[in-house]
Length: 346
Image (cartoon, rainbow, N blue to C red):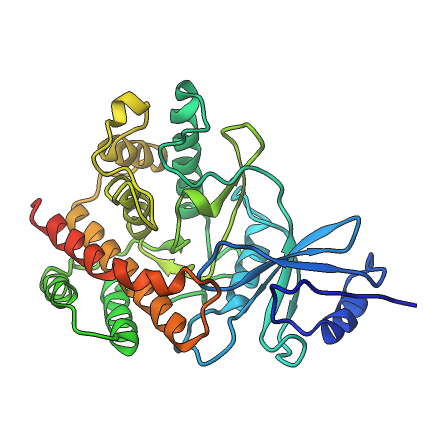
């Protein structure tokens, strides 16, 4: 007789999932254990253990969601397309679009065992090898941006052109839809961004949308990337959006919910600074250094603040995937203030 179970820290009904797994996984023998990963504020992720094999299940969160958010079917489509490139991604297994199985759309992908590093100071890595880890991150990002998205069936994955104009409009709407109080810092940052929007330069590539250290799995003990995770915000867009977002880690505060490297002696840590990262990236891609870096950085701070405002709102509504969501609201105003500080560097 088949048996199935689910851990107490999920809200997934196990009977329907059991039936779906029987129909979907050739190696399924009727028993599974499901455990929610503690990290992640957006699309909840679970370790699905069927005894001799492990998968990752990613689903939309429950409850009312903002328009176009949490599109796990887009994630599945993208990592499927990237299987045929030199970008390291998990292997897609199956997509379930039937909301009746667990209450929302979800997909399965391979479980990639390796090292996830959370602190950009890399304290667990010998100082002599830290530059290699940072280079691996930059190289992977450059490889992603060099993928011929049309050749891999992704010409309609986003709208080429006017990326920043469209994104600024989108995130202003998303922020205001989830705002819970008036924040003068956000209003001032929005005004600055609207007034300094650069002309479209025609650059377009697949962009990850949330490229940072803890969204990457390294091979155990190696400065070699095994898989890039969390493609929820991926689209076609301007590659500098990814690079600027990645470089924010050098400017974020050292303590608190989001660890950064603000105020740290990067030379003593043997970690490249912002200028070195930009130069390395541009050299790999064979392009000129960006002309509108201040705008790209300021927009990255605004966008992150808008994302966290949405996380906080879902926490208030009871739809967030982690208790940390309720603490995210405290980060919105400081991030907006940092974005404003960035604009004064011109």
